[in-house]
Length: 378
Ligand SMILES: *Cc1c(COP(=O)(O)O)cnc(C)c1O
Image (cartoon, rainbow, N blue to C red; front, side, top):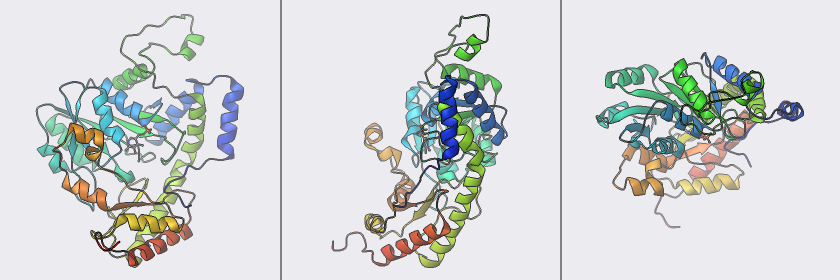
């Protein structure tokens, strides 16, 4: 089965993991610190904080920025549920904003402006599928409205401008992301003060870590803020150090495969729309395409599966998931809903070749040629 995404793990990762086990120091040691610094360097940032997941990263950022009950945070609905969940964790209200269009399925600035109230405190931008939101436009909007700008950069590690939009950015190293530590995440925060608050809150709010106490005369610590256990361990950091070295090359393979997809889909499936103009700054995390309105997506998915090709959907709109629908029963985001009904995510990962891309597009062409419109005889 050709999968939508697949981690690349090999001998180097095996050796790195074995070295941690042999060292006897398994969490929050030198490797975590090295990984933080290497991750920051790749993004042209001063420093980074490694955490257990991107969800933890988003929670820590909102917590450290003091966002809480009574506050509203603008979020897209075309995202993974964690973006909105993190807002609820701090007691604030996620306000869902529609996408601009199917061609540019990123949060609409006009809609964001329309949904701003006196309670709006922050915006969480998502670089959907790896395609970057317009930095200057959002920065000037945030400045004008006095809002904090946060990036959910789960799809976009490895580009220097990512992490430089606003106060902070959250990254994910989950198994299906552009680089993985199995589970894991990182934060880039612009100000040192915010970064240090986040670093402290990551480990129970303690003023020093186990490593520091080992090398210090003073065995004591204090807790001066509310904290969590959102630490990364040495095994994950060791994986991260190996993966990070390969990330630029993997992102480039993703880019080349995406270009080939565009050429072939345009030629063979002219009724299929590919979001975002080429070139658009991107880490090419996903390969989303939009099927014609009358197509039965399920039939396309089933036919591709028969050919050994997995496809998925990014995303079911967060506001339509049962938990959020119960919270926002009246919420309508027509462009997000239409996009989500027609979107299909094709396989894209660095283990693929252009021959795989050709196979997928042939499969898609066949599936569309034999497709019955929605509502036709079963
Ligand atoms: C994967 C993902 C997350 C959550 O990442 P975890 O590391 O699994 O917590 C958050 N936001 C987006 C957009 C994601 O794709």
